[in-house]
Image (tube, rainbow, N blue to C red; front, side):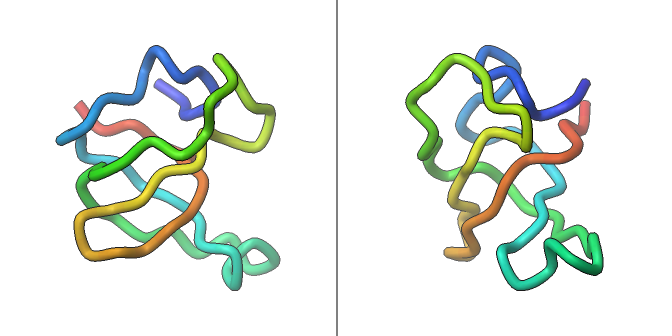
Length: 64
């Protein structure tokens, strides 16, 4: 699953996000979703979330 649809993202889900400072390099950061910050039902660059460790970024991969 990709992270462009809000319906795919739930609190407590394991995801890989790209942080703002990593957008050029594409480095991914793994973590657990704490808050969903994007209100729209989808976003072409990924739904913005806050991880439990406080990192904020856009979801690129939803892990199952």
